[in-house]
Image 1 (cartoon, rainbow, N blue to C red):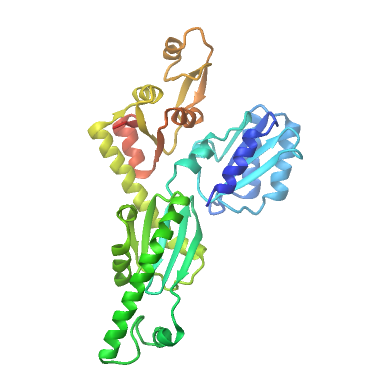
Image 2 (cartoon, helix red, strand yellow; image 1 turned 90 degrees about the vertical axis):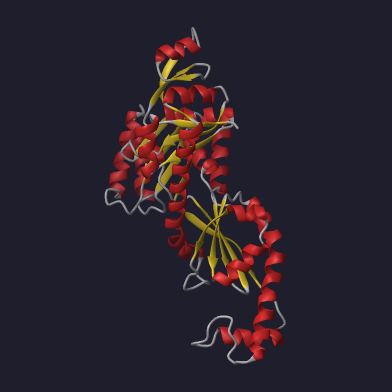
Length: 387
């Protein structure tokens, strides 16, 4: 499962007895001309200084960044380091941007307890997609998540060579369409019928195993790819549950044997389109039955009355948290909710994942047009109540 190793690494950081810890988030996307190694190292150093770290420590971390991370392997880099860098210095790349870096000049540093909530949010709340390629004799499954793609399984119909060799020769003959034997007449029709029935048997036998695999990968949505005839037969064999997860169909690639990495450009824009539509649909439901505004949404969230919290991609709102954990929009309100407790000003993004976890709510970040509507029409935050 994509992200599983990162989640395990975060769990180890949280369980570690190393304290305090530097949590350093960096935008290192090589596609951005401003992200030269020197530039993001300087931004990291500035963020660490702003977090109150001593110059010797800042210099030591900056030196490691310069020596070992000059060639980046992702769009975002997350580092957890202890006071002794030889005791704790974990790094993880993500192939996606992170919302907390949008308004921090591409670098954010936190010193103290490990600041993992935003990263755990990304791992737990973003939707996973399965891309399923279907042909008459093959079903390949890929998982797409957080800007990455990996092959889950690849199944090929096993048949008797004497029976199926003519079909295989025809499939590979120049100028002859896939699934059409290089001969005419009634024999071809009978052969085509047998081929279709064999494919249908493959789909019926394979789908229960496929459904279990997708459940194990926590897949939320399915994108199908293949010829129209193969997809039609495949969807007929799917269970109602799997059918409901299908969000799009994709034309078959020129090379079905392409590596998982080569599939990513084919599906990335499609996934972005599906996500944008889903975010706008969420806001339409908020308009009909939901709540909005930062104060109202936070109040209901902490009363465990929301199942979904909707926020902008860039969350730069500051809120006030009482020592017991109660959060309010103003210091005065926090004092009313938690009398006689110390109150501190904190970033909403820093406390929101924990508030959502406590109440069992799901956080939905909005981007693009949905983000604009959320800010302009709904006061920058909204929610959907439990049914």
